[in-house]
Length: 187
Image (cartoon, rainbow, N blue to C red):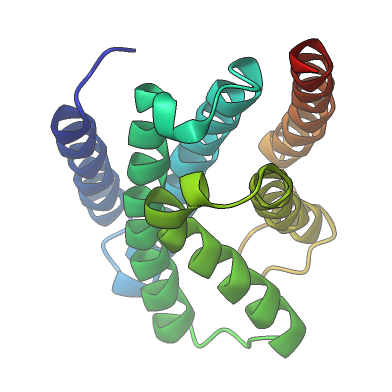
């Protein structure tokens, strides 16, 4: 995908606006609007993250700073996930959802890493870069596990949650193999 960062961001923000407008059109009560906007915005972030992880794994051991598409998608993912956070925060507030402190701390760390990644990930060690991709993957996977266990209010288990979890686990394994092979070839 050879879109400039500016065009990627315009497209991403446009899709996020469409998600919010569609949620409002289909579910005009504000608590439901933001519940569904957060849900589908999260799925968009999931897809962009997996593609970003793919770019990282498939270009290994090329440094991030030399990989413009990867840098652009790290930025796109961060922007989309900040928008998702806004929708999610509004949903939690409007639906008066209880928060569990251990989940909030784990998610907050993931959000912090996601927001910092476009600026600092290329300057960190390879081991930290691996940690970033697998930690964010873990947090996303745990969201699907929570949905499957019925722990998230207003989100009954659905086939998409099984597919999302299986996709995340499969990609983590496949990308791990690619990374390991890429590093071995470089040595």
